[in-house]
Amino acid sequence: MHVKICGITNYEDAMATCEAGADLLGFNFADEAKKRNRYIEPDDAYEIIRRLPDDVLSVAVCVNERLEQMQEYLEHVDYVQLHGEESVETTNALGDKAIKVFRLSNRVELSDVEAFSECFAYLVDGYAPDERGGTGKTCDWDKAASIAALDKSLFLAGGLTPENVAEAIQKVRPYAVDTAGGVESELGKKDHERIRAFINNAKQSSLS
Image (cartoon, rainbow, N blue to C red):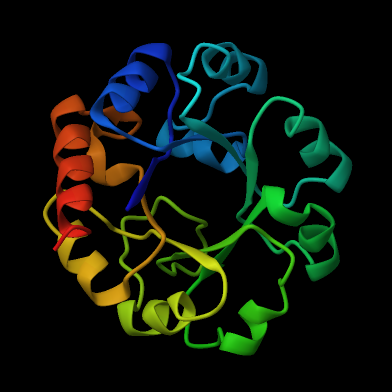
């Protein structure tokens, strides 16, 4: 089981997360993240990324960025995570460097997801009408499981915590699990004990 910890804003949290066994770190470049204290300037993120272990991958979280801007990010990060209303054309142009996010409202159908056929992975998140990601809302695990059955890697996000991640993995069987707020002591402040617990519970669950 792969684990992504999102909302990394400083070197100390990045290193603690790597030492705990995370596979991917998410750096939020979207202005919307400022209200949850999870925003990081791209140049500051690049400084951290340059110091990451070779086996830990980096993800830039974007919302409705221009294609050219995301391609520029990819000179420094491994993947871009598209958390807005990006088109099929834009997403597929990024190919296997794109992780496309779907907030699982009742209106999301499998055919909507499958149209983004060229991306590396799908990410499903909880739905809140006026917010994108980091809401702490769980998504529909049954619908997530049906997406996990498609021929594409699936990141499961949305309200995941050390307490529920094992159950989520057993129900959905994703490629990876992803959390930000579930391992924070307050908005934007990572709790290293919760990070270790989350990663341990996720990795152990995938062995059962």
